[in-house]
Image (tube, rainbow, N blue to C red; front, side):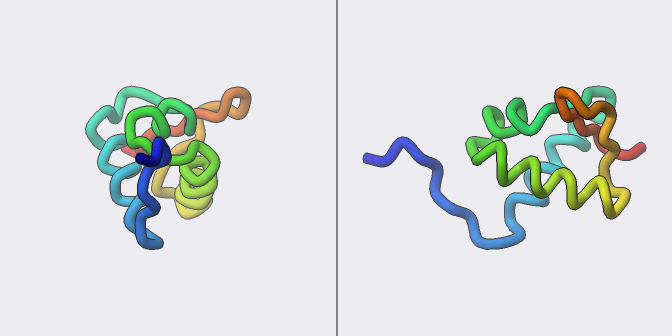
Length: 72
């Protein structure tokens, strides 16, 4: 039995991240917090969040620790 989460096909984690951020638009999350909720690597989630911030789909509200929030 593996304790590691199953790998998702490319592109399927992004909608889960966005859905969680949309559910709690008043909160900002660290990649680590999202990793605990979604059960995936915080490094992968961080890379996705940085890409989404660059595209203007999420706001990076702080740098240390990095926190992200859904754009209203």
